[in-house]
Amino acid sequence: MYKNLLRASVSTLIAAGAAFTTPALLAADGAAAKPPLKVAFVYVSPVGTAGWTYQHNMGRLAMESKLGAAVQTTYVENVAEGPDSERVMRDLAGQGYQLIFATSFGYLEPALKVAQEFPKVAFEHMGGHKTAANVNSYNARFYEGRYLAGYLAGRMSKTGVTGYVAGFPIPEVIQGINAYTLGMRAANPKAQVKVTWLNTWFDPAKERDAALALLGQGADTLTHHSGSTAIPQLAEEKGVMLLGYQSDMRHIAPTAQLTSVTHVWGERYTQVAQAVAAGRWKPQPYWAGLRQGVIKMAPLAKTVPADVEHQFRERERAIAMGKLHPFGGKLVDQDGRVRQSGGSMADAGIARMDFFVQGVVGSLPKP
Image 1 (cartoon, rainbow, N blue to C red):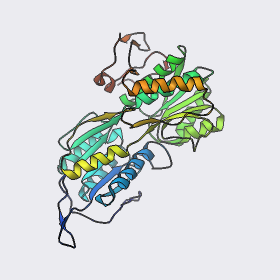
Image 2 (cartoon, rainbow, N blue to C red):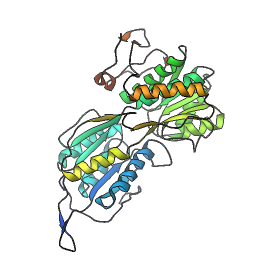
Image 3 (tube, helix red, strand yellow):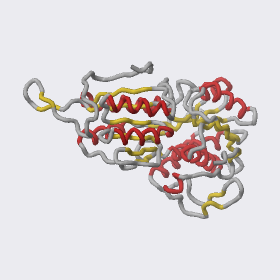
Image 4 (cartoon, helix red, strand yellow):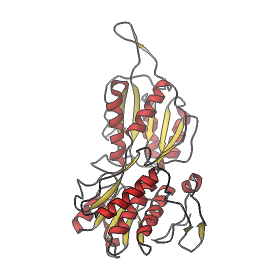
């Protein structure tokens, strides 16, 4: 068994290779009863008390609470992208798990490979861009919350500089950096967002060092796209403002956090499990944001003035209603090239975003 923590809500076991629908068993009173749907989650970092994996695990727990004995869940945490994730997913499928959530971008190719070997298992991959007969992709419009966080930073920052610690230069992360910058510049046209790449999703020491370096470059606000709580802890320690990400970080940075872009997966995970159990699951890509409640902004700090909060809420409502698009209007990149002259960027363009907008200080690695 894994050294990683494995947790199951009930102990009923079923044979490997089960179909998307769960076969009926004979209950004690002679009535037909379905065994629980076996659902597994694969996490790239420890669950911890906040962050990317923590939010996915909260979604798992919400699904358990909603569906009760109809599901049996387990998870494997701290699974590296690549061969390790392939091994873990293959083992879970072999144990009879009928639905597997692969919750990190780098799990895509391993999930596709294992899915071919287990055609009756449904795979849901977080953040991917490919589907297959039994592999679906799902994602959140994190950039909507990032735009709002950037706007708040632009109104509150005295130096006009945010330090942004980022994991890998994938489109999802680039979207967030650009949306944050556009939001910050909507409040302060001269604002700068200084970016440092980690080339990892989870490394508390490296995250802290990167943020310290950015503070030395004039940043008085910090944000991040990484998996630990190191940067919220540092912001609280150094007395700088935090725009949190993934979880509400108030229990870690009670005075530093202005707000946080939180991820809420419980309803989505419940719906997917219900679809698999009912035999109506199909690989239909899912991308949701503020309107659907997958993205929620944490409460604003008491230090935010009333007029700033009012303008923040107006923009939040406008995005949720589709009246304000973070990537709307003229978009100019770092080199002065016009990437969009007007209108709103289509999903296809957002999904493959590979440039920085004006105001970002940093570079994208060459392919």
